Length: 136
Image 1 (cartoon, rainbow, N blue to C red):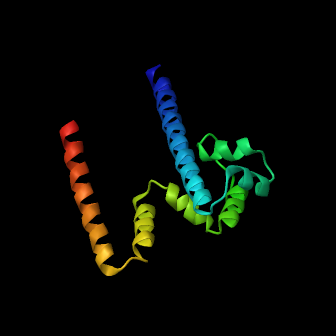
Image 2: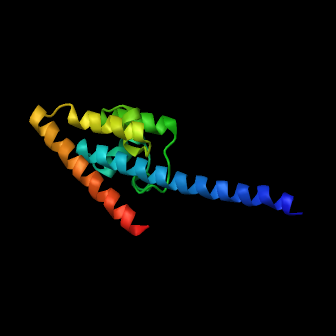
Image 3: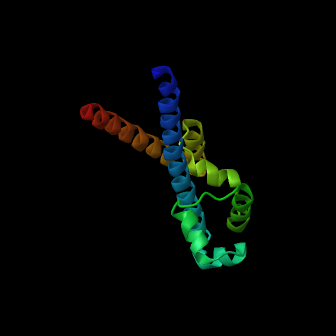
């Protein structure tokens, strides 16, 4: 009988992890969209009008309550004059995507400013490693 239960428990745990990841993704995408909207100097109302939706729809997306479908994501990227990949890249928790984001942020800086940023990142990384090792 326990053999029949294991896949059910495992399936439940996988579903639970997937739901947590979906919530995190929705939240990250929402923050990226809000950031691009603000950068574009647009209000939620203006974005809603351009999308042909109500104000609350944009608010729900930005708060991570709703994940926009791919068509909506492309529309938002067009409104913000950015790539859809930029919205997704800002939302990603994958190291490669985050590395690319840091590269994009560093590229326009002067060499001495880039060096300062790298030193700051190294210092923060060291601090966070120390904090996480003391929590264990």
